[in-house]
Image (tube, rainbow, N blue to C red; front, side, top):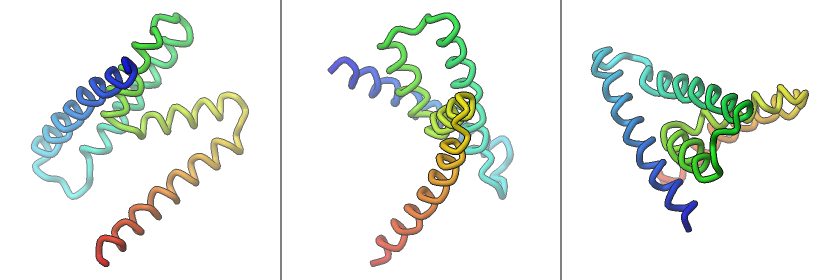
Length: 124
């Protein structure tokens, strides 16, 4: 039960941070033609998860609860793209190149297909 609370609380923090940063980016750029807010959030989330994952590997400073709160909760609420990027990097680093490529392709194709199907279903 504690794990659920930690992930939920972290997701709240990450979601609020995502909203605030995205809103700021769009206001700063005066409603740009491109989704720069999402791009900034995904890049920042990837930077942070990459940094923290390395720290976690080399220094073992995160407890299991801290991992749930920070990695799954905060960063998951901020952007799931960071988890996708980290998992792909770890596959590639572990010489699982084929799996990394499959992960990239399947995430992109299935994600876009699911959005398209969801949009079609909403029209019915």
